[in-house]
Length: 195
Image 1 (spheres, rainbow, N blue to C red):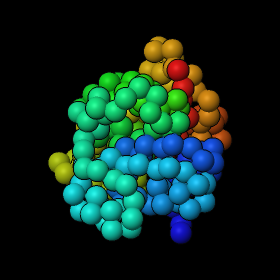
Image 2 (cartoon, rainbow, N blue to C red):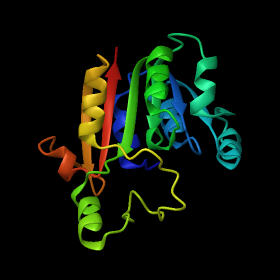
Image 3 (cartoon, rainbow, N blue to C red):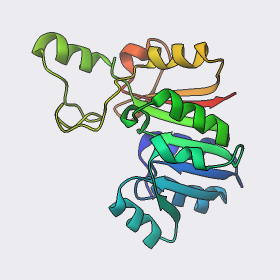
Image 4 (cartoon, rainbow, N blue to C red):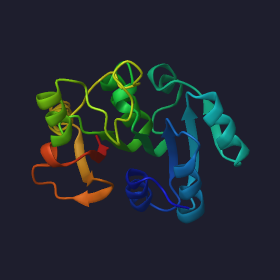
C-alpha cells in the first residue's frame, strides 16, 4: 500500500507496538499501515461519515467525531502517539487542538501544508489571488482551510508554549527537502512533538 508522503514519514517514525489515535484519519490508510507494518493498536476519529464507513469496512476502529470538540472526551495519556495530518489548519482553534493532542498522547505528529511556500507567495504577489496548488487544490470559497499556518508560525507557536520538537521533516513535491529555508522551500511540513 502506498501512503501519501507525509503519512509515510509518520508511519516510519511510530514505534512498533504503540497505541495510536489518528485524528482526522480519513479512510484509515495510515491506521491500516500502522497495524500491518508496525503492529500498532490504532484508533481513529474522523468527521466525514463516508470516510468513517470506508475505514470501518476495512476492519479499522474508527468513530465519527470532530477534533474541535471531541478530543476532550479522551483520557489523559491514553495513547503513545496522537496524529493530526493535514487537519490542523481546518480546525476552529488549532492551539486548543494541539494542547489536546499532547494531553492525550505522549507524543504528537502534526503535518500541514505550508502557506509560506514560494509558489503560494508568487501566486499572491503576481496573480493577486488565493493560490490553487497540488496541496491546496480548492478555491478560496470551498477550501476547508481556515487557519493559514506557515512553518515559521508553527515553530514560533510551539516554542512559545514550551512544546519540544523531537523531529521535523519537510517535503517539496512529495519529496524530502532540507530544513534550510523550509518556510520558503517546503510545500508541506511534518513535526513530531512532546511536552
